[in-house]
Image (cartoon, rainbow, N blue to C red):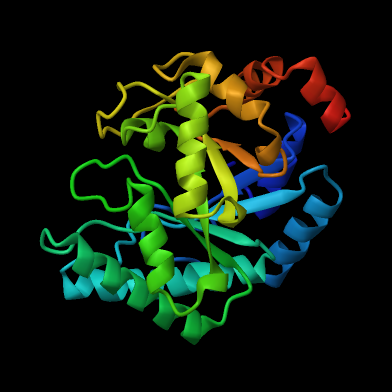
Length: 282
């Protein structure tokens, strides 16, 4: 949801299409700079959420942040930017900040992972945030790290502040990285691997996106639900998976009008079985 017109407008727009969870950027996602948040904006935002049916608000960190960079200037800008984003989340009482872990350090992923974990630790120690950082699985495009569950798990393992780190699972990214959600066997195998490698209890948010590109293509190209190569069966399995009922789910489908999101939500809701609806009290 866009924050154009004020942070509270994201809540109002989300409520208008019956969202119970939304994601926002707390600042421009394509700029390093951030305007200070005024106390009146905080009050309006928190009041709007309390008056709505939106139970969860999650923020997404700027796409510019790359803690795995080999460029000292980029590292320092990324470090400062993440610290500011955590502070902004705390100001707005947002519990989760989704972060793309970063791209490789001179072709050595192990060194990059160590650097990212170390910088995250420094930032957490500096800001002492209430907000939890959620490391997002990536598509494996270019030198991007953490397309595989093992690297995500290693990042958390390397950190001194594991309680401040959780995970965001993106369906398009997973599919692009070679994890198949399309049938019952591969779907359950995927989540078994996630649980044994990362721990399902650390999963806090799911991004629901179909994929324009084929399985294992390492291309991050989102598509509307059921219009891509994952297809409806994979999303039906996910929407009716009891262990994921309580995990908030966010759409990042490519067309971003309220009508587009409402349509995708209707598709997802249509996949719910009678048993699931009964269990959820719908």
